[in-house]
Amino acid sequence: MVLWEILAALGGFAALGAAAGLRVVQQYERGLVFRFGRVLERVRGPGLTVIVPFADRLRKVNIQIVTMPVPAQDGITRDNVTVKVDAVVYFRVVDPIRALVSVQNYPYAVSQVAQTSLRSVIGKSDLDDLLTNRERLNQGLELMIDNPAVEWGIHIDRVEIKDVALPEAMKRSMSRQAEAERERRARVISADGELQASDKLARAAGAMADTPGALQLRLLETIVEVAAEKNSTLVLPFPVELLRFLEHNTARQPAVTAAPAATEGASDGPATSERPALDRPTAETVDGSTADWQGLDSTASELPELDRPPVG
Image (cartoon, rainbow, N blue to C red; front, side, top):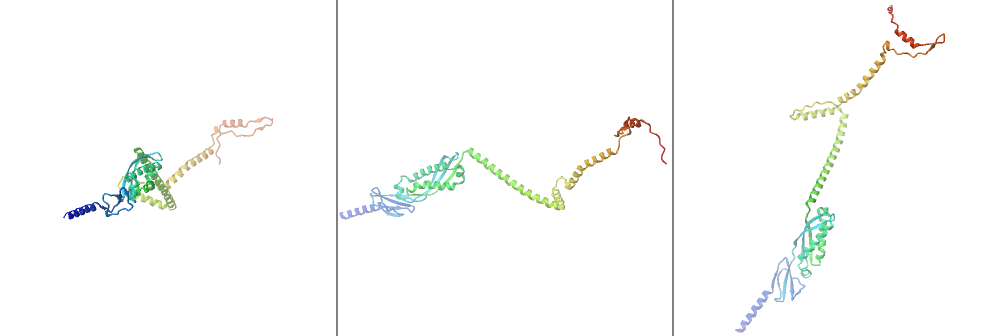
């Protein structure tokens, strides 16, 4: 009877020991067994596993992808702009033994490396690169974090820069720059449109100059468009050719008026009292004295005119 009690007690202790040595490893975990403080090489997979009670200690390592946000880091870019940048790191454990043995608290280690690498990337980059060329910066940041993480049995899947916070003064400056750029583009587009329109108008003017009737048709079409609206506007078409004709005649009229005036002044001689003296040569008389023709002319002008009978 006593023997049966002893066997039952031993069986109970064996059952308790077996139950104490049973462990369950989840599908997303891997188990490491430390026997008297020494890690065993064999990694326990998912499912039920057995360890030696009171001698082994099982440590589970999560092999899922971990999403770790990187706190916003203040830095100065290469072009001396103060910015605040935050990011996110995606990593997972590929070697559970090295992740537990090589580094203490590997998530914290990855976080610190990510922060220092992010500061380094900020100092080496320009503001334009941080805003527009993030793919290249993400790749460089991933390489910088992955170099030390490989020795810890950790693989960096990807790194993403989430947000770039700028000072308010810089935001206003960039807003003005963008507005000026848009205005410049608008002016260039408008000037290009004016150039094309002027080319088309020049071709249209050439075609209308060859066919004057086209100009009249266009004028009548414009009148119809204006008259279609109910307004009090009165449009009176005035041909351009008439304006050119009036301008040409107005320019010629002063010259024509001046020419007859000069001709009339030349035909109307002066009055008898204002008859100019003729230049006549002096003649010598018989006695050698000179005859004064001018004096004779003045004497003749003083004589009364004689009544002459009409010629039959």
